[in-house]
Length: 318
Image 1 (cartoon, helix red, strand yellow):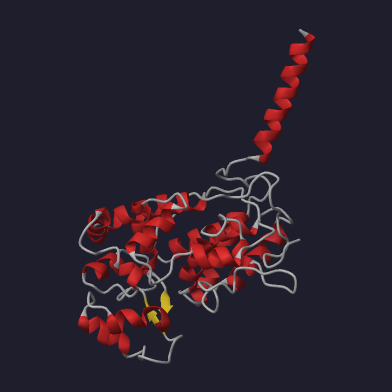
Image 2: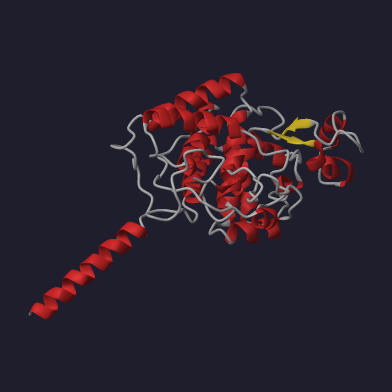
């Protein structure tokens, strides 16, 4: 009996250790340790979006690019140093990823209230949600409890983040590799209902592709010459680029998708074509499904328990 009791105690300790080191994300993770967290994030995002509405899309893009490289671990926020190579200078991020200063401000405000408690990865997840909501999009309960990575991978950022010229097969594979379905791809692409993109990313589409509305192409050529002007900006949504609505899908149906990767969703066949039509008609369905897909995205390979750390500065490992 004593032997059995000893075995049971050991097994219980092992089980408890496993639970603590493999913790899952939970709602209201900081309910007692940092009860003001969500108010701080929301208020800082309100201020940032009043200054520049585009920042909501920029923060969302940061979160997406973070989650697609080794999970939602805040690695995209790390600066390069003499001894450390981060992800900011990878192809998908160099000179285009933005919003880091907003995350810095949120982190500073959070640290003043709850020192060494909240991860940068969780701050980014909350800021992305609030940016969408403040531009007219849905809201949702963000599962929390992520910890911050001590490492980053520029090579993974270069190879695993979908690009603006990706075709549907490539997009589907890259999303599937992250546990996301074709439906997830279709609804998450609707994030392009806000924000802008650079001429270099859509030049080939407006000059060389045929499945594009000619008047739309002519309009975009005015600010995107056949050579030069690489960083000139154009809205991803032709009508309401600072409002989170379903016009993105109407653009696709009208062959006004600005990026090749966007228009690829509406190529005449496949379940995603039906979804595009549905979302173009039903903004409630789009916003509902977008919120669900964002929660799914936010759960990609988080660091939890004793893995990773709580960074004091989002740009540097402790």
